[in-house]
Image 1 (tube, rainbow, N blue to C red):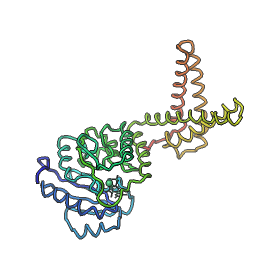
Image 2 (cartoon, rainbow, N blue to C red):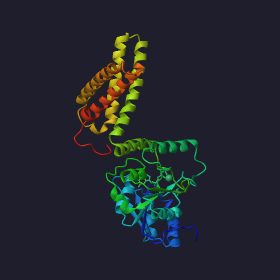
Image 3 (tube, rainbow, N blue to C red):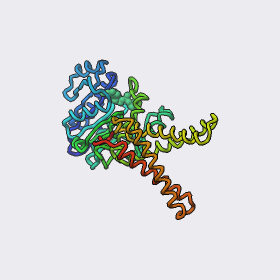
Image 4 (tube, protein in one colour):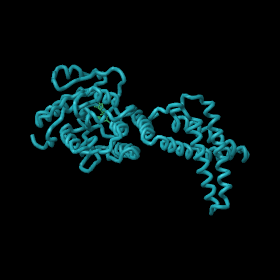
Length: 369
Ligand SMILES: Nc1nc2c(ncn2[C@@H]2O[C@H](COP(=O)(O)OP(=O)(O)O)[C@@H](O)[C@H]2O)c(=O)[nH]1
Ligand SMILES: [Mg+2]
């Protein structure tokens, strides 16, 4: 067979495939991998990580009795990413490839991934969106948009065009540079790139086919988990800057809540002064709840009452910092609004520092929490 590109001295390769209810797809996947092995004389083994599908997967693999195919049936710690991590830990080959079972990923592209590794890439990724890549025609606008937004949100972590890909290859020893693998969603590639601090990512264009049989397991809940996963990865990569970004987003939402509460209270006939005071109180509680849940979630096990009182004190002191900064700069800056902006910035900085390092402090911050 022609058309395969292969590195000259080929290394041993384990193809890790997470499966859940893929018995119908496996014969074709195994056939295509076998063809590849024979065509290019690749030392390739297949490691199927099945989460106890009970759909005939076990019987199928047993009946085929192929020495290069291993099935691991997992009954605990289920989940796609955990199954892949488990497979990575079990493999002993020089190179590991991860791909889906549903034939969305063309096995024939594996040699190109290996060539990219040979050329020095830390990780080689089968990419739908790099030049030359494509997806099946019937991807509706919603699925496309969904994928684009997910990619955009990962931009602070990697500029590659398809970080959502589930088809990639890397040297097994590359994984030893990673620590604290803790994926909570589907995106194991992103987890590896961030936690192993991989720099050189090579994208190989692929055509992404629709699955042959069965249905996607990508649920809405899984997509929500992606946001939690992203937040952890941001914190791992950017540390305190990530907490600050979340704090600022929460603060902006608090401003909206303040204005909304004020408008509603005035409409309901509340007097001006009580309305202003109540609106401030509402937004402060709102900010506290969101900061505790998101910006500083690592400290959630500590006393909520003490944290709330501390947060109110930090807000109060922050307001004082704002006031004194603004009045001190009032005559020095023109227009005077510049003084007010400086005051807001100083007050916010104070509030953040007090929240991050005093109110929501813990002895050991778990990375990625
Ligand atoms: N072991 C394991 N594999 C899974 C799980 N969920 C999905 N998979 C496999 O992961 C791959 C991708 O899943 P799929 O449903 O095709 O997701 P999609 O391509 O994003 O729609 C397939 O090979 C699935 O069988 C799981 O919970 N455990
Ligand atoms: Mg799929």
